[in-house]
Image 1 (cartoon, rainbow, N blue to C red):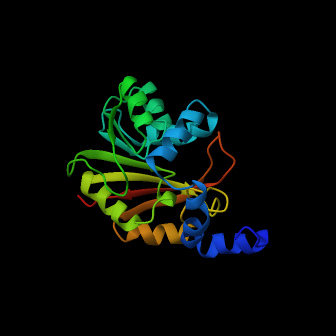
Image 2: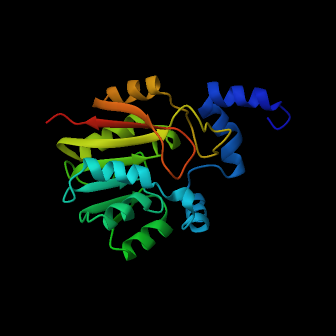
Image 3: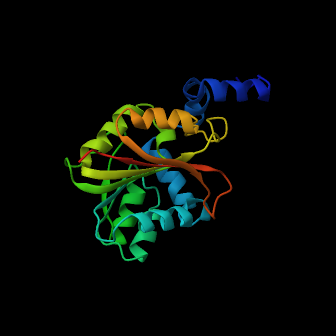
Length: 218
């Protein structure tokens, strides 16, 4: 693979992202292991790349401050900490990195260590589930959505964010897929009602982001 021209590798990344990820990135340390994310998050904990001010404002405008909120794959907890600063009190995070779990617990956020796609939390517990820049890291995405559906209360919603037709595995070694609006809608509609799906931008990032609000039937 190293000897292939960039345009060939880019084609493979776009058309066969999972195969590219497995063949190229995992062997170079680009997998989604606990050790990988402990190291990455420790290195970038306070870096702006892990802060999402526009996403946080969007979520805060849609969700009641007393709602039970779970952020799965929450990373350094940038969104959760932003909601906490806005007066949200019932905040929960799920993260593969023990480093992140320990740091966020010290900041008063209820944390659980876990490995997606499983969500090791009780049925019908949360009003809102956030999955920000998570789906593109997973292989078993259908199972992940069913797990979100399970832990949501009836009538609850999930707020999904993924890169919009960018950042395949050639760009981000941890990514296994690249979404556009059509492919994301088809995936989400297999489990949820899609209430809205649109492109947004975050003030802290240049990339376009697909945002979807999906709802569990009451």
